Image (cartoon, rainbow, N blue to C red; front, side):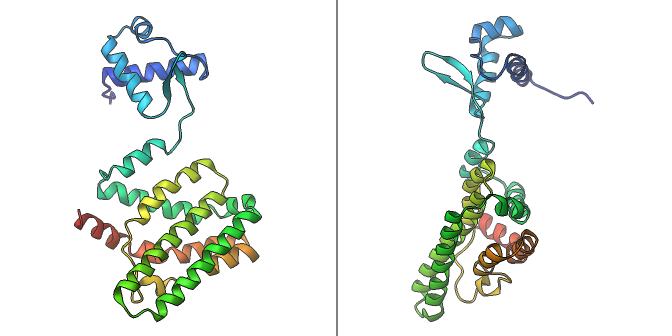
Length: 242
């Protein structure tokens, strides 16, 4: 079946082919030069260039014209996620991607972690222990939800630090999306699933400090089980609130 491609899309592909053939460090031709080179109108060329600029492949610099740049892999995705326009199926896909990545990145964490990062993780889990102790004695519901809000922030920082420890720039960029996914969680007070997590952050930290990537991978799988099990509930609450 022949692919249905618009003239703008084809022009966009032709420009990418031009970039591939001529090297990604070269200055691009001007709009009119592309018009003559590709045999399309200036309006079509302008729209094609605009799309490439939007995804971070090219940019226009003063006195240099339009040049090719190395795009951030998750750059466009960041904008899409923050727009709030994602449908439930797409959000589910991103949520599942986050679970896959966290379970699968154990070896890279072990290879690239630094002493400074381990110290940061130590401080994060110590703060979480203190907050959980406060939660255990809190009676006022407003106080409980304030502590729960702080625990959610600690949760984000713990997992973001793990992404940082991989040393993978694309995964580090993914932290922005991770933070957005965490905003879907409702504050969790005493009766919620904080107490039902099979492997805590403290346990994950101790595994990372003393054991193997395989043990950490299994620990992370168990740690994320409640989020996997409650994924649909979280998504339902999110979309009911819109």
